[in-house]
Amino acid sequence: MFSASGFRKCLRALACCLATAVLPASGALAKDVAIGVFVYQGERAATEDWTPLLDYLRDAVPAHRFRLDQYDAEGLRGAIAARQIDLVITNPGYYVAMEAEFGISRIATLVSPLALSTREAIGSAVIVHAGRQDLRELTDLAGQRVAAVAPAAFGGYLVAAREMLQRGIDPESDLKEVKFVGLPMSNVIDAVLKGEVDAGIVRACFPEVLAQQGLLRIEQLRILSPRPQVGLPCGLSSPLYPDWPIAVTRETDPALAREVARALLAMPAVAGGLSWSVPADYQPVHDLYRELRIGPYAYLRDITPEGLLRRFWPWLLAALALLAGGVVHTVRVEHLVQRRTAELRESLRARDLAETRMRESQEQMDHLSRLSILGEISGSLAHEINQPLTTIGNYARTVLRRQGNGQLTPEAVTEACDEIVHEAERAGGIVQRIRHFARKREATRDPADLPAIAAEARRLIVGIMAQAPEIVIDNRIGGSCRALADGAQIQQVLLNLIKNAVDASRDLPAARQGIQILLEAKDKRLLIHVIDRGVGLGAAQRAHLFEPFFTTKQDGLGLGLPICKTIVEAHGGRLWAEPNADGPGMRFSVSLPCHEHAA
Ligand code: ADP
Image (cartoon, rainbow, N blue to C red; front, side, top):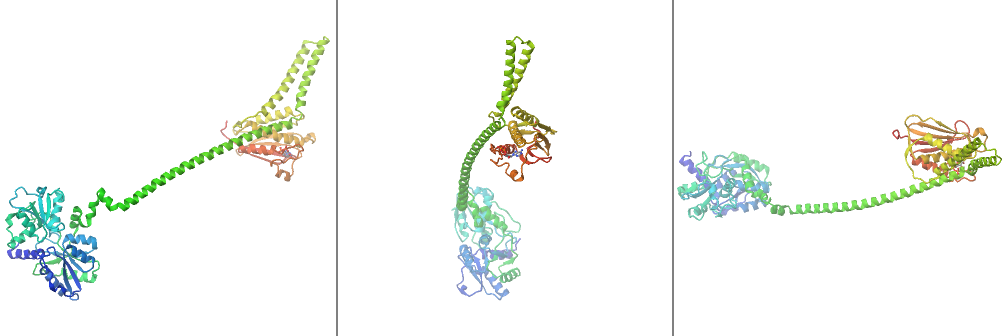
């Protein structure tokens, strides 16, 4: 415990801090280093409080001339902003606020004689009239009138306000009234004692100081939610916070800051009992400001829909603009996509139409080409059909004659009828094949039986040509390779190639008139070669062979080979011509892709 004189000394020191100060008239002395001091009781001079410090610094740091400038909270803020001071001495609350706002930084923390440590120095006492039996805890204050020094007073309001908040009482809304009575702090005690309010908030130890000075009978008051602290002879309703710091501003010369800090740490506790220690941790003060959402944390109050709107409206506006832009963009893109899709659909439709027309005209051309081949190869068709008709007529006349002269035997009738039937079938077969070949039809793709197609082409040629040469089919296709093809079109190609081969060898000796159709499978392709021993073609003529209207025949059109080429290429194949490797004449080759699984 404190000795009586020690306690007196301590109280005097505290009284120095709490006492009001008046700026001395002689403050006009020119000084190089201005120490801005927050005077929270601005009625009486604080010179007495800080003169020992001033004197000490003048001695310890003689290279500089120190002066003391006293300010209230706003004045101190303005002075820092205007760079009028080099050192700042203020309470922990304002220090934290100005640290956030101006970047001032502490270089030492006051060691008050009454404080338990630099970290545990300032607290609040919430006092009520001793007769108020209904008020015992801070929570009893709900709905009561409470006096305090000022909204920004640290020990005189904020520390207690945080304590109430932590116990579920919001001082801003749960109290009936908070009456800020201003300085001196004794105003709060007066209001409590006069019954103008139900409770009052003062800095811890202030009632004890007044009692010590004979200005108050301490038993008239009672502390709410008392928190006795070992070693602290004062009533307390809150935890203790760090003591006042001395800080430098951003503009303070670092060398000066160093010298002052060194001097302060070496400063002995002088008459007032004040000394300085290494800077305390002011995080608890930050926490207090954050919880109360004031000072540097006032923005936290804005975290309500309206607050956020007020604070972030430019961003919200930008976000809305972006969103609107996004929507417009999406709608536009959607519109464009729809338009392009419609255009695409239209062009696909046009393409389909064009393809249909092309296919129709191709089919038309195929048909005409077939008729043309027929026209060319059936020069002696009348003669061919005439032959069986003549034979039929002859047999019929023979039967009639024999009947007339009585020589008609049943055997003769049977023989004549057999021949007539045979010849009639022969003529009918010729007509049938021509009609089948000449009919109009649509292109198909089926597994093609090439040997059968070649055989049918040979039958057709032999059936309708007056003097068809010998046509040998050499089938060397093995394995499972089949072509997917339109059989009639491939037959048409073969007929064209065979007809050209016949034409090329027509006027040559019999030995050069044979035609070979060679079928083989090679490298996943089916090959059809039409080989003749005819007049052949020179290189210059071969270069134009597949061009439309190239012909060496008097009655030729020069369309047969171009049409064949178109048909073969429509099957994914190739048609080409080269001289016969085994003698005179030409070899025309068709290659078609193999479809292994086309069964
Ligand atoms: P066209 O038979 O109406 O002349 P093609 O396109 O079928 O039309 O033939 C074009 C030309 O190619 C023929 O006139 C002929 O000169 C030549 N040709 C085609 N096949 C052979 C062949 N096997 N031998 C020699 N020349 C040929």
